[in-house]
Length: 377
Image (cartoon, rainbow, N blue to C red):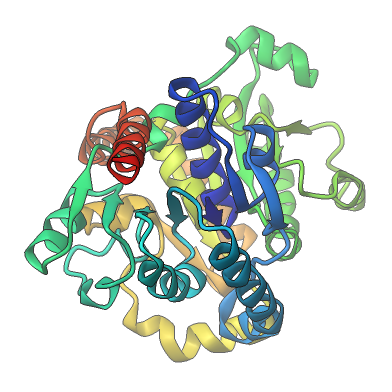
């Protein structure tokens, strides 16, 4: 099992759980992060530090990835598995799949790169895997039209995203009263993302609390993020009375919030599934800003809810537009304008509907075991 991003680690962990339920003797190993390791995958290469934002920063990690690629390919050739599961991470996995497919064991590509594209050209994936499982119906159909064996079982997040605590228990866990209205602030999953986005979120929180005295703000953090750095930023902005941290409680935070400010990424789709009205933001380095100025005009939307419905369901504030004034205005509107709020919630329900039905992870595990049986026979 080979995953290279935080979202891939999440998908890989849930799939590993389902495989082990059905085949307890299975030995799972490969590339991933903390979640896959906790799910029982022997992580030979930790991918949690590989992420990068933009082309320029991506170039910096290429030498490390090439080194891992060579070592992993050698390891797989010397000890061929019964099945390889590639998870997203197209830069790495497409190249690896083309090399491994020559060795004869079955390859399942879970979450193929660019699956969200409505009119994607997937012919470059020919020769990469035997079977592809897409989280979107339109890309599975398109792949089949282009000669690939592709399946759609629904989006795996429908199986993964749900609250674990009641509102009362969640508020008690983070030191708030259930009567408080909550706004979720999601600065990103990578530390470098967090440092670009967190200051503007905290400044926005201070301004919003002056307008809505009952508001409290919750920042859900992954275990990979340095909590000490986050606390120092909260202290710097004087936000201690109004901001709480919720480590490893992203879904509870979103489910119990009245609105959210979400950094573009998988979290926007998680918020959509939970029906949380949101503003999507993205801020990066000066280099990222230049890249956006050069390339961004060709991009219609960056947020997955907007991409899926091909419509401006949620406002997107990018780079300089993601200012405290703009964020405050959008969140204030979502909290105060009942008509706009209900319209967005209705559109987010359409996003969830477009993702199919729950059960995708279990069906993908069944397909993986079927490939194993065919291999054994």
